[in-house]
Every structure is written in structure tokens, then in C-alpha cells.
Image 1 (cartoon, helix red, strand yellow):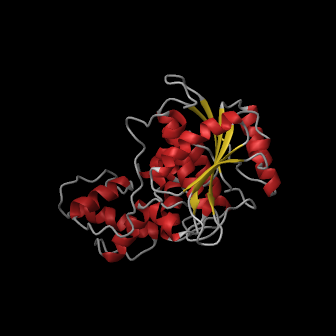
Image 2 (cartoon, one colour):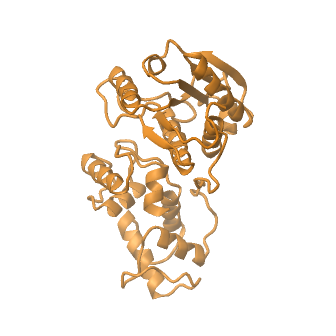
Image 3 (cartoon, one colour):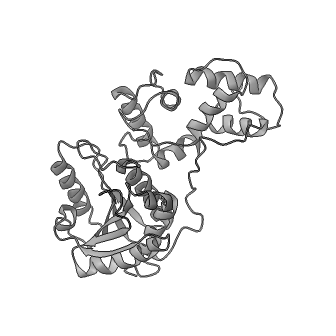
Length: 321
């Protein structure tokens, strides 16, 4: 283990791509979504352990080269102790497994325990490899690794992959520890079959849907005037028929928001975007354009987050816990 127990460190976490025109690979899933999800979880967990973390992903870039240069410059100017770049592989649909690149002996020592932890998830061992040809490893001044978590075009790897487990593996490999109060996993709520009144009331409270007098709902498992008014408020915000009834359409909309999908400019619209626009005071047209992006960035700054305009797990936690 590179880190000595008890010593707090400064990590530079580079969430791969996510800075158009620097975008990742596509396969069964999208690399930008995966790196953003895993990278933000890693950042949160390292902070929960008491470490300092510098997010090295640029807010915007003019080219792939510009994107890479900004990442290195951020790590170097911040004098981070260790630089970690998070990526996913894609090749031919059959290649699978995990590999980590390093450009120095110290980097290889850092990479080995990270790889060992990821392999516990069941991935094929592709080894620690020489990464001296990779821009972000060549141009950072500190020990650095680039983690290719697995192959996003491999059905085998995507079946094994869980973003929370991957983030845990990276953090434990880097530090030997996990937070005692771990960062909450993001469950897939899109098809949650629970349509009970108590879950409805709890969900509406999470979504900050108050009753007709502006108060949170009493979670009493009864459909009364207050709960009906909160349902109608949510229905109006997301643009569905205002029935005051928690039917299939309403539950579908609630579950879409509770699933906390990664939302970025020009990548998503509709119900989830309308909800976010309501929360940040932007025009609720369901289109994630420049004005919505600016409002999201303002919300992120106000909540101590990296203001990149992308709504990932850390930003969702500020919206709905």
C-alpha cells in the first residue's frame, strides 16, 4: 500500500473524458456516464476518509489535446500527491477485464493494490502495464495511474460491473480503507414496484414537494388533502396530467427522478430535466440548454460542488439526498 495508514493525502482524480469534444467510447454503455459516476463516487469516498481531493476534469475544452493539458495542469498546480485517471475500455465486444497503466515504479506500486481490489469483483486480470505513452501519465509531476476499469462493450464485464463496487475497489486499493459511513449506493429506482402510500409520501418529501400550505407531508400512510396537493404539484412540475392520484404515470415520473440519472447538457430532457429546472429556478421546458446549465452550475457552486453543470451522484445528493 502506497499510503501510510493515518496520513492524509491530496489526490487528483481525473474523471475521464466528459469535456466535449473530448468524449469517451460507446458500447453497451457510454464511457462518459460510467467514468462520471465512478469518479464522483471515488471523490466522495476519499473525502469521507479525510483526504483532500482535486477534481482534475476540465469544465470545458476546445479540443482533446486541450482537455488533456488542462487535467495535467490542474494536478500539477494543485501539487497533488497521487493522480488517478478513471476510464473504461472498448474494443471488439469480446475483450474483457481490467488493466491499469503506470509510467513509473512508484506508479506501478500504487496500481497493484487497486488492480487486486477490482479483480475481487470477478474481472479478468489484464495486469499493470507501462503507460509511458499516455499523455496524462507523461505530463503529471507526481506518481500517476490510469485505471481501465473494464470493457463497456463486453456483456461479460457489464454484467459484473457495479459502479459502487468499482469505486470502493479503487478507494480501498489506494488507501487500504473505506469510509465507516460509506457513500450511499444509487439504486435503480426506474422499475421499483413499491407503490404504497407511505413510499409515495416519503418520495414526495425527498423531492421537496410540499402540501398546499408549503409544509412537508406527514408520512402517515393516508391519502389526504395535503398528499393530494403535493401529488398535483409534482405532476404540474414534470408536465403530466394533474390528477392528484399516484397512478402508473406519476410513479413512473417519480421513479425516473429517484433513479438519479446522470444529466448533462444536450444528453437528456423531459421529466427529469423539468424537475431539475424547477429546483434551480430555470424555465421548465424539459430541454437542458445553456440557461439550465448556468443555473445548475450556480446550484453546484452554492453547495460546494465542482461547477461543471453535470448532474451526477454528488449533485443529486444535494437535491434529494
